Amino acid sequence: MSAASVKGWCPGALRPMQSGDGLVVRVRPFGGRLDAAQTAGLAHLAERHGNGLIDVTSRANLQIRGVTENSHRLLLDGLAQLILLDPDADTESRRNILVTPFWREGDETQALAAELEEALADSALELPTKFGFAIDDGTSRVLAGNSADVRIERDVSGGLLVRADGAALGRSVARGEAVATALAVARWFVASGVKDGRGRMATHLAAGARLPEAQRGETEPAPIMAAARPGLYPQGAMVGVAFGQIPHITLNQLSACGHALRMTPWRMVLSEGKRTMPSASGLITEAYDPALRVIACSGAPRCREAHADTRGLAAALAQNIGGAAQLHVSGCAKGCAHSGAAAITLVATARGFDLVRGGSTRDEPILRGLDRDDIVRDPSILMGGH
Image (tube, rainbow, N blue to C red; front, side):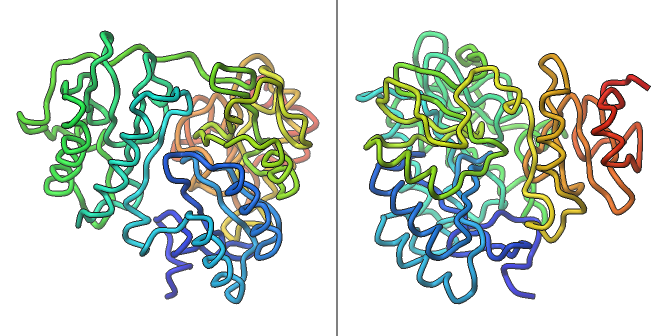
């Protein structure tokens, strides 16, 4: 079995994944940031060596779609020239780091990210494939709802702490101790919790595992910030990407502004320093656009695992799900686009769509085998109208 066909792991640039529209090549921006030249370069590479479509993922990465076996090598050469390539696949897989997009010039966020990237590259840690870190060191936490196993955060007084995901409290650390402590927590997890290369920290702690005294703490992290939305922030302009996919033309238009892009795990990007909302086509600029409440994976025919066209259905339902309800349309039970719960989850199967309310693709459906056209004609089915 080729590496590209193995399931249960996330793609990378050096280790792409085969999908229905070709290889998916994931690019992990260093520090969660692309300068304008890198943004323009990625748009060019996606057009030349892929099908021109780029995913913005829930891990704050970019995925170039439609790459062929022949074009993959040329794409890697281009990524190397843009300083967006790791030396090997193992280093790349360890560098799974979310970075708050709301850092300010001169604070410690980018320095912490660079130090953690370097430490992970130099380590021999064999982490589970989806094990990740978060640097969420603002006065308010913005990544608390996003997947990460070890978190570098601040406490209410502004001091740094390291917290294992699933633990309510973290360990206070000096600036020079933060990265070393985060790696120590990861090493403990590997030594005590990994099975078959999989596993997550919160699940491990919930099952009764107890952190060593050296990694436990009694410090409460800073409060959680309200969910980010499109709009202007002190750091720049935040825009959404419908269904997490952006055409190369739109990415190129963003680069033409001359501003760097900060990636987020919310299928939004922040145009650094921009004081007006971008006008590129396909971007969500309104804070309460209904499309922001809808999550859909690539779906058929782009994904070989998907049983239906998820985005077509999601677009048809976006205006009709009511209130602040979140809708997740998944092409299969894996839930690649969204691992958590949603008010309404539709899971495509060979027999139609299964409906889960207030849960995820892993939860028991309350209705099975719903017809796509019936759902579109009468969306009240989803909200309990029948």
